[in-house]
Length: 95
Ligand SMILES: [Ca+2]
Image 1 (spheres, rainbow, N blue to C red):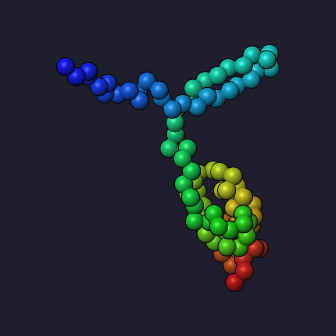
Image 2: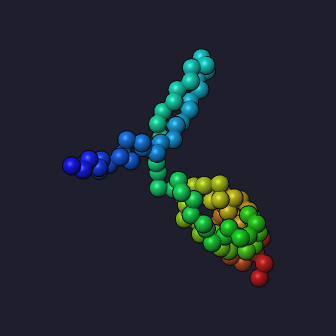
Image 3: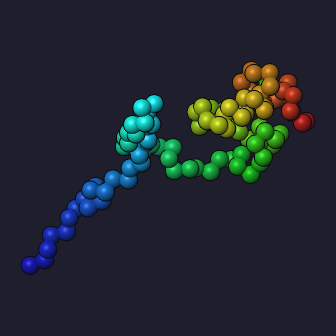
């Protein structure tokens, strides 16, 4: 008789991350962080360009990743008149 194969062997080893919180009294807490959708880095169209360059500013899709370092960089370096788009009205536009 064949041994029955466990069906969900992977479910016992969840791929978890830990968040570490250190409080003022030096207590350290570890909390499990559930995987989130953005954890696996997806290549972005602007990856080939230097952050803040004209090409990068053009390629970056505002808010495509939410409020990230990229988004903040885009707001500071690209959308200098803060109207939500990168175009000829912004200081870094080369056109
Ligand atoms: Ca702008």
